Length: 432
Image (cartoon, rainbow, N blue to C red; front, side, top):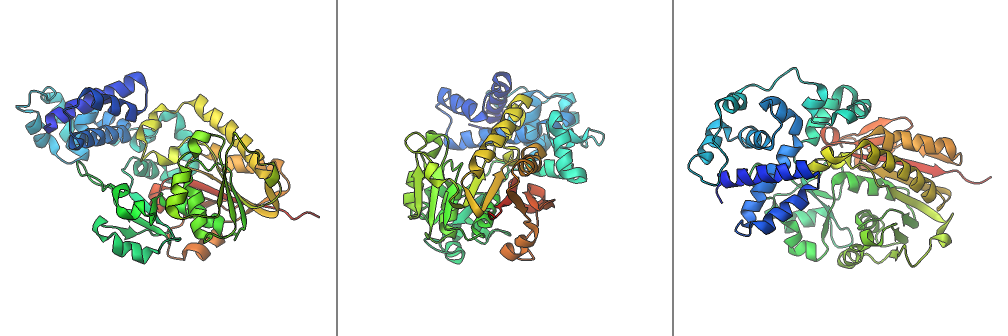
């Protein structure tokens, strides 16, 4: 396919996503099935066009004074990808599969300066109904953070300490153009590709198959390292999902102690078994939610890690369509679920033990407000400030998240160059 046909496909898929309000991956998959002639390179370019248009949907619509899929895709190709009006017009000319040529009105808008008088939520590409929460979280930096969330995300790898170290991985994977992450001492990063470029398929690497590394955003690595810093021997990963943080904890603990991996969904837990075997993690016991109980763990855990289900606002760079599909009702349901999960998980912390609450959200209602409400009800728990611990773990030169009273930490794309992530460390007081 030529770029003209790819632009037409992106417009069609974006229209399908907006009309049916369904996940973009489903629309891309269905389009691919219906257009078998499109090769992997074609599908990559089309997907990148769709994702980048969704990332900046509001600001591009403001530039074009038009929110149609055609306007968003044209603006993405010409302005975000840097081909300009001339490049866009060239690929539309003489391609019978391309959209209609650029109109005079569209041409004028494609070359005009971006409007300076748009509302803050438009400049930040944040849904209007979420802007008050977002501004509460970041204040004057809210637009900057929104723009950072509208960029492409890098590929972050976590070195598996059970099979090597970062220096060795840098040598072994030098062909991937990796560099060290600036906070996590076990992280490596591949910067995001630009425009039509293809990101390396790291899961096809021999090192991945041998368990030398896992794909994991740096913020998630940091949360696991903060949790491991309390030096636990008995750990419950209460919302383990596919096991990313379980594996990170196993590596940080050097296969010592015992980690119990649990999730309310057996389906979400399914990938963990293969991942544990590949990583060589031997101190993990998976608790099937349908076959076993956690009653024997109550009041015994040195650490309970609770990465609760959330809105996912912190990972909008990776899932830009979810930015526009989230609803007030869905967010309210998540907040209720988090409250229940946090209360349930706290039962397993021993006196003197710790609970780490984490979300991949940037919304106060899911983060600080949630934890402060819990502390107000559970008098046996107290907050442990992460601010002094940060420098001890990551060094004075490491980027610092936003800290709020009583010491909670929020990582974000503009501040720490990571996904958005909230971390609160709590301690259960000793009895007596």
